[in-house]
Amino acid sequence: MTGMDKATWHRYRKKLHRVIIYVLVLLTLAVFSCPILWMVSVALKPAQETFRFPPTFLPVEPTLENFGKALNPVFLRYAFNSILVASSTTVLTLIFAIFSSYSFSRLHFRGRKPLLVVILLTQLLPLAVLIVPMFRILSGLGLINTYPALIIAYLTFTVPVAVWFLRGFFYGIPYELEEAAMIDGCTRLRAFLTIILPLSLPGISATGTYVFFVTWQELLFSLAFMTSKSMRTLPVGVLDFIGEHVTDWGALMAASVLVCVPVFVLFMFMQNQLIAGLTEGAIKG
Amino acid sequence: MTSTDKALVSSSSGLIREVRRLFWTVRDHSLFAGTLPYLFILPTFILIGLIVVYPILQAFYLSLLDVQFINPQGNFVGLRNITNILQSSIFWLVFRNSAIWTSVVVLFQFGLGLATALLLNQEFYGRTLARALIILPWVTPGVITGLLWRLLLEPNLGIVNGILATLGVVNPNIPWLSQPSTAMLGVIASAIWKGTPFSTVMYLAALQGVPEELLDAAKIDGATGWKRLLYVIIPSISPVIRITVLLTTIWTANYFDIIYVMTEGGPINQTHIFPTYIYELGFRRGKTSMAAAFGLVTATLLLIFSLWYIRELNKRKALE
Image 1: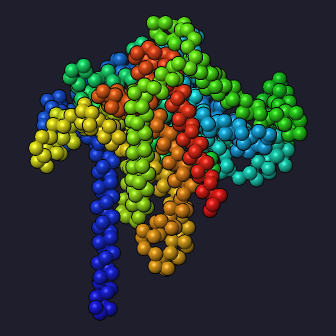
Image 2: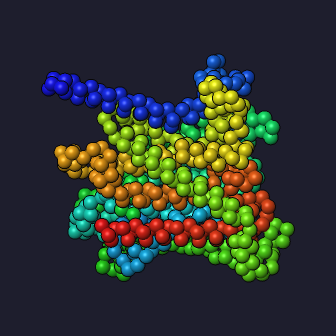
């Protein structure tokens, strides 16, 4: 083989490598996004088209009638319940987690390590072990079928996760900033409230997004503690569209799209911070 | 006085000003400052005590009684619930299902997650968009994932059978989720689809931290792609791999939504894992005490696994 041939061979190989990468990327994206596109496609199909076999990939006559069916008053009530529960849980979780994760990431005190381990251990706990005793306790307090029941139940897993997340963000803020403020005569508390908190707003909003995202989709507690129909949240409510004998897949998928949209949008805006929070927390946890 | 102090003082007046002055003059060396770390964590620990520790104690108590919907007070039966569970065949079936479900899902999430992360780490046109798109399954709520995959696997309308039909498979109307031999396959596939992007994102972020010089050095030394992966890339992202595998294991073992929506543990208990079975026991069949005992057994198993895993990691770290 001459030198010339080797160079061509090298270029050829490089090109082939690129082609393979593009093929693999397309294949990966197809596997991971096609089911979601399929959900949207079925949501846009008129009823008779859903029952065609083999199915059509794109709707032949797209229609919004399924969304009209999905957006009934009962569904809107579920949406209201979900928004209320998820946002109250998020706010409460942040209040608890901001203070304790600041303490864990910045302050030195006796028993810091073991107490942090206690928080991490609660994450290992299966929720299924809590559900039965918690139902008894909540019904003893007369809280079954109320918003506080669900919010309290959600705090069991959102607070530990949020502490873990926020700790990573607080580590990212240079300690010198606080020190400088304290040398200037600021108290620790004031340095925290006026310097650290504003700087960690991106981290706090990422944590809030994550908590909202987790509570928005929670099914087990909602199923167990909200037994009356008017108190259900979306993940339970959306199951209404499954019929005993025949399921209206068009309306079900339209409702599913509606449940996904808020978290997809939230995630689009927060993606970078969220990923930073997940990985930082993982490395420093 | 700094300018912010001035602004604060001028913006408030009278009593508010006094209170504010008092509040801010509490200094670091005072008693207050010494207890500040504890004051900050106190609310969280009171909360954990009330809503995590207390219910667990309650679960222990319940597991010693025979409480049911029809007998809400219950009598003391001691450890009989636990021994009954360990001797029942359903426990071992649920145990086996949980082990298969968790290990297969976690293994695929690790392998596919790492492979897609390496792929999306290459240079190509539209990389940012691809990285954003791949995350969508993870952001899709579990209930919706379950419903969506129920539709995909539907025997008569589903696209999976549709594809098999166009490929000319003889009998494509496979009832994936209602026959015992394939139901587990169906729920596992959807869990892998939903969870893999999380691993991808974690590994992708970790790959940014692999030192470029190390890769170049390996290349100059003539290391092939596989060797670079095994001896350079994986060791340098191993902290992230460890924590990701631990997290996905715990999440998968505790996952309820997909199986509940797709099969409710059926057919004939073939897809029941611990969380779905505990829900069925406690809330469908009204066997409160049995469900509590089952929950404790699950928690113990998971705790043993986690502690073993963490100990193994520490051992290996010590060897390195």
